Length: 189
Image (tube, rainbow, N blue to C red; front, side):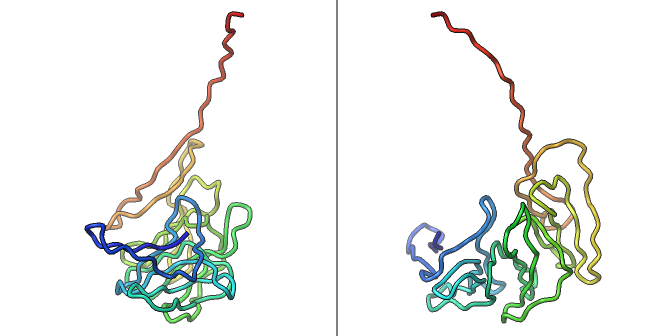
Protein backbone atom coordinates (compact mmCIF):
# COMPACT_ATOMS: atom_id res chain seq x y z
CA UNK A 1 0.00 0.00 0.00
CA UNK A 2 1.16 3.51 -0.82
CA UNK A 3 -0.24 6.96 -0.08
CA UNK A 4 -1.30 9.09 -3.03
CA UNK A 5 -2.15 12.75 -2.51
CA UNK A 6 -4.25 14.56 -5.11
CA UNK A 7 -5.75 18.04 -5.42
CA UNK A 8 -9.47 18.44 -4.72
CA UNK A 9 -10.12 18.43 -8.49
CA UNK A 10 -8.27 15.11 -8.92
CA UNK A 11 -5.11 16.56 -10.49
CA UNK A 12 -1.51 16.75 -9.30
CA UNK A 13 -1.37 13.17 -8.01
CA UNK A 14 1.83 12.30 -6.18
CA UNK A 15 2.95 9.43 -3.99
CA UNK A 16 4.01 10.27 -0.45
CA UNK A 17 6.35 8.23 1.72
CA UNK A 18 7.59 5.97 -1.03
CA UNK A 19 10.04 4.26 1.35
CA UNK A 20 7.21 3.14 3.67
CA UNK A 21 5.14 0.01 3.09
CA UNK A 22 1.89 0.88 4.86
CA UNK A 23 0.20 -1.63 7.17
CA UNK A 24 -3.20 -1.65 8.86
CA UNK A 25 -6.44 -3.51 9.48
CA UNK A 26 -8.73 -4.10 6.52
CA UNK A 27 -11.72 -1.78 6.48
CA UNK A 28 -10.06 0.65 8.89
CA UNK A 29 -8.14 3.84 8.30
CA UNK A 30 -4.46 3.15 7.73
CA UNK A 31 -3.39 6.80 7.58
CA UNK A 32 -4.37 9.93 9.51
CA UNK A 33 -3.74 13.61 8.87
CA UNK A 34 -1.71 15.51 11.46
CA UNK A 35 -3.41 18.31 13.37
CA UNK A 36 -1.76 20.97 11.18
CA UNK A 37 -2.26 19.09 7.87
CA UNK A 38 1.49 18.99 7.15
CA UNK A 39 1.99 15.27 7.85
CA UNK A 40 0.30 11.96 7.30
CA UNK A 41 0.59 9.42 10.10
CA UNK A 42 0.78 5.74 9.21
CA UNK A 43 1.96 2.43 10.51
CA UNK A 44 4.25 0.55 8.20
CA UNK A 45 7.66 -0.82 7.47
CA UNK A 46 10.81 0.72 6.05
CA UNK A 47 14.34 -0.61 5.61
CA UNK A 48 14.82 -0.55 9.42
CA UNK A 49 11.64 -2.54 10.17
CA UNK A 50 8.12 -1.80 11.39
CA UNK A 51 7.09 1.41 13.13
CA UNK A 52 4.79 4.41 13.21
CA UNK A 53 5.77 7.20 10.82
CA UNK A 54 5.08 10.86 10.06
CA UNK A 55 5.20 11.39 6.29
CA UNK A 56 5.57 15.02 5.15
CA UNK A 57 2.85 16.01 2.67
CA UNK A 58 5.18 18.35 0.78
CA UNK A 59 7.75 15.60 0.16
CA UNK A 60 10.82 14.73 2.13
CA UNK A 61 11.88 11.88 4.33
CA UNK A 62 9.45 10.09 6.66
CA UNK A 63 10.09 10.51 10.39
CA UNK A 64 9.92 7.40 12.57
CA UNK A 65 7.91 7.96 15.77
CA UNK A 66 8.10 4.42 17.16
CA UNK A 67 9.79 1.10 16.52
CA UNK A 68 7.84 -2.16 16.40
CA UNK A 69 4.51 -3.19 14.94
CA UNK A 70 2.21 -0.16 14.62
CA UNK A 71 -1.00 0.29 12.67
CA UNK A 72 -4.19 2.30 12.34
CA UNK A 73 -3.14 5.62 13.93
CA UNK A 74 -5.85 7.97 15.23
CA UNK A 75 -5.01 11.54 16.25
CA UNK A 76 -6.63 13.32 19.19
CA UNK A 77 -8.70 16.42 18.36
CA UNK A 78 -6.03 18.74 19.79
CA UNK A 79 -3.24 16.87 17.98
CA UNK A 80 -1.26 16.08 21.16
CA UNK A 81 -1.84 12.32 21.25
CA UNK A 82 -1.70 9.60 18.61
CA UNK A 83 -3.24 6.22 19.39
CA UNK A 84 -2.28 3.12 17.43
CA UNK A 85 -2.25 -0.64 17.86
CA UNK A 86 0.72 -2.91 18.31
CA UNK A 87 1.03 -6.54 17.20
CA UNK A 88 -2.32 -8.13 16.34
CA UNK A 89 -2.86 -11.47 18.13
CA UNK A 90 -6.09 -13.43 18.53
CA UNK A 91 -8.46 -10.73 17.35
CA UNK A 92 -6.99 -7.91 19.42
CA UNK A 93 -3.90 -5.76 19.84
CA UNK A 94 -2.45 -3.55 22.57
CA UNK A 95 -3.61 0.07 22.45
CA UNK A 96 -0.52 2.28 22.49
CA UNK A 97 0.04 6.01 22.44
CA UNK A 98 2.72 8.44 21.35
CA UNK A 99 3.10 12.21 21.22
CA UNK A 100 3.77 13.90 17.84
CA UNK A 101 7.44 14.31 18.82
CA UNK A 102 7.81 10.54 19.40
CA UNK A 103 7.56 10.63 23.20
CA UNK A 104 5.61 7.59 24.47
CA UNK A 105 2.25 8.41 26.09
CA UNK A 106 1.08 6.64 29.22
CA UNK A 107 -2.09 4.62 28.76
CA UNK A 108 -3.62 1.84 30.84
CA UNK A 109 -2.55 -1.61 29.65
CA UNK A 110 -5.40 -2.81 27.48
CA UNK A 111 -6.19 -4.63 24.26
CA UNK A 112 -8.58 -3.46 21.56
CA UNK A 113 -9.76 -4.52 18.15
CA UNK A 114 -7.16 -3.42 15.63
CA UNK A 115 -8.37 -0.05 14.32
CA UNK A 116 -11.50 -0.20 16.54
CA UNK A 117 -11.05 3.03 18.53
CA UNK A 118 -12.01 6.69 18.10
CA UNK A 119 -11.50 9.81 20.21
CA UNK A 120 -14.45 11.71 21.60
CA UNK A 121 -14.63 15.13 19.90
CA UNK A 122 -13.51 16.88 23.10
CA UNK A 123 -10.52 14.50 23.46
CA UNK A 124 -11.43 13.40 27.00
CA UNK A 125 -12.03 9.77 26.12
CA UNK A 126 -11.74 7.00 23.57
CA UNK A 127 -14.62 4.80 22.40
CA UNK A 128 -13.32 1.34 21.55
CA UNK A 129 -14.15 -2.26 20.77
CA UNK A 130 -12.22 -4.61 23.07
CA UNK A 131 -11.80 -7.49 20.61
CA UNK A 132 -12.60 -8.77 17.14
CA UNK A 133 -15.65 -10.60 18.49
CA UNK A 134 -16.87 -7.63 20.54
CA UNK A 135 -20.42 -6.53 19.88
CA UNK A 136 -20.46 -3.69 22.39
CA UNK A 137 -18.74 -0.33 22.68
CA UNK A 138 -16.63 0.70 25.67
CA UNK A 139 -15.27 4.07 26.82
CA UNK A 140 -11.78 4.76 28.18
CA UNK A 141 -11.66 8.01 30.17
CA UNK A 142 -8.17 9.36 29.49
CA UNK A 143 -7.81 11.47 32.66
CA UNK A 144 -8.60 8.61 35.05
CA UNK A 145 -7.94 5.45 33.04
CA UNK A 146 -11.42 4.23 33.98
CA UNK A 147 -13.25 2.01 31.50
CA UNK A 148 -16.96 1.41 31.21
CA UNK A 149 -19.28 -0.39 28.86
CA UNK A 150 -21.48 1.92 26.77
CA UNK A 151 -23.79 -0.54 25.00
CA UNK A 152 -25.37 -3.92 25.65
CA UNK A 153 -26.64 -5.19 22.34
CA UNK A 154 -28.73 -8.32 22.74
CA UNK A 155 -28.25 -9.90 19.35
CA UNK A 156 -25.21 -11.52 17.77
CA UNK A 157 -24.74 -9.03 14.93
CA UNK A 158 -21.15 -8.20 14.05
CA UNK A 159 -19.74 -4.67 14.27
CA UNK A 160 -17.30 -3.61 11.58
CA UNK A 161 -16.47 0.10 11.49
CA UNK A 162 -17.68 3.09 13.45
CA UNK A 163 -17.16 6.76 14.12
CA UNK A 164 -18.32 9.40 16.60
CA UNK A 165 -20.59 12.27 15.50
CA UNK A 166 -18.93 15.72 15.65
CA UNK A 167 -21.06 16.73 18.66
CA UNK A 168 -20.06 13.55 20.53
CA UNK A 169 -23.63 12.45 21.24
CA UNK A 170 -23.82 9.42 18.95
CA UNK A 171 -21.80 6.50 17.66
CA UNK A 172 -22.39 5.80 13.98
CA UNK A 173 -21.69 2.18 13.07
CA UNK A 174 -22.56 -0.68 10.79
CA UNK A 175 -23.73 -4.11 11.87
CA UNK A 176 -24.10 -7.28 9.92
CA UNK A 177 -25.68 -10.56 10.79
CA UNK A 178 -24.89 -13.81 9.09
CA UNK A 179 -28.03 -15.65 8.12
CA UNK A 180 -28.12 -18.53 5.72
CA UNK A 181 -30.78 -20.85 4.43
CA UNK A 182 -29.64 -24.11 2.96
CA UNK A 183 -31.89 -25.46 0.28
CA UNK A 184 -31.52 -28.71 -1.61
CA UNK A 185 -32.78 -28.50 -5.18
CA UNK A 186 -33.20 -31.75 -7.07
CA UNK A 187 -32.63 -31.13 -10.76
CA UNK A 188 -34.24 -33.40 -13.33
CA UNK A 189 -31.78 -35.83 -14.81
